[in-house]
Length: 106
Image (cartoon, rainbow, N blue to C red; front, side, top):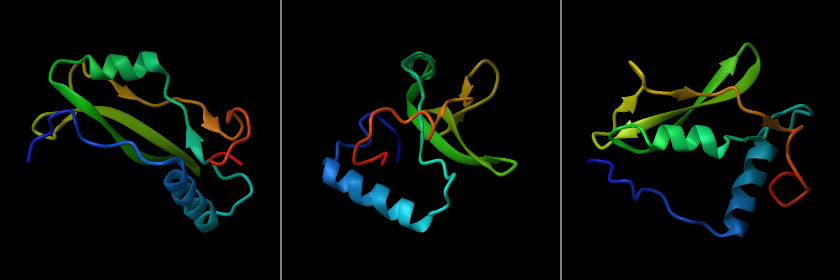
């Protein structure tokens, strides 16, 4: 199959809350990171790269610290990671940067 840019769909907040609750129940450590924030500038830079159909997110570890790594993917489902393509991380995590308390971050 090929990516066409329409992959993914919106879900109801109750489904997001359920999935988030499941994750938190499986990872009950007191200092666990539960979210990351990628700003619109870096996401738009990735999405505007030639041939980019969307963003793929990878899990990572920096020592014992969880990380997410975002890369563009093209229509052939290949990661855009070599040459001048952008690989993004170094983003704030929640906690502590979680915003106002809500059903996903509390």
